[in-house]
Length: 467
Image (cartoon, rainbow, N blue to C red; front, side, top):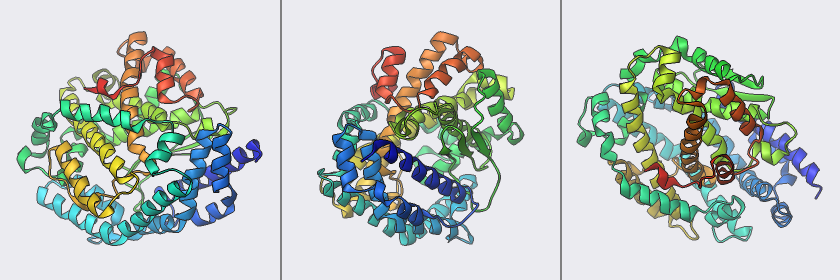
């Protein structure tokens, strides 16, 4: 295998796939061309490629090849899944819009109805495809020589999932979801004891804070922050247009790093729009500042805890009283800060529980029939709310991405503390801080989160520091 040729074709594949996902996810077309894209680049994803890249000391490329092999063997299901998500309906509304309607519903009973209807459609139409994809990913891991998908990810992804799980279990034992109760009750007007999982989208939506987050200042808040930090990477392309079939989930699509990076956000309204924009802006700025001379794997692959950490860093600005005052004229941000604290505990506990669940799901011989009940049990305990079994598989991101989020939260908190130490609490208005970030971003993902943090602060990445 010629390494340069492999890298070149791998970049062509990723660029084509990301462009396809951008166009479909942004609501500009219904169907994905996943099958055709995989067929054009089938030579990238073979057992021989995985073994050779691993033996030659290129674990990032070997993981890419292994993930691609799973993608190659589930391409038909992935294409059908995307088509269905774009065309299915829930109560005469597009499937994707049902989640938006649920977040905006003011009646708890209506929120529960919408969630139940959405889960019923997903369980009937989408979950069988997801189960097929899950089973095939487990089979491929074993065919490649690992005892489980977990073992494959730990080896090629260079991540100690067991150690991280010990830390998150300690976090779960040391925190209480009821700390969020006062804010949940104030926002939703219901007792904590009566709240359900279906109420959480409305809580995260936080309509009581809408007046503080006007839609006409959304893009200016981002652009002014960019200007203050001295950021000017031209590759960021913002897509904030409303389209009926646009995904309700904001995303960043790095089609050509660093020159063509799409930042896509839906308009749900209020604070959530700001958080979504700034989170995805963190990804976009990271990719758009990457040194174009870096090898493919350092621009596109690597430890995604790093890019998620930068995403959380900019997202956190929407919870920063100084930034809110400077960008939106909010003089009293107490309610925003209280909401952010409640949201934080719910998110961190949810993802901590997800990791433990996914370690069971992706273990050597999982009993899939037992997984819905295990999922509901773990998530109910973590959230303090009744959690339905229905999202036992749709709530699972591929290849332990939940672990990347958990590491990213810990990374962000420590990187932010370092920026505050160097440049003060209003680091987000410092061009010098922008220089530091630009230099970090220029590395792409050449270093993992542990290496990045050690180099920046000398500290060890440890999730228990979130307690």
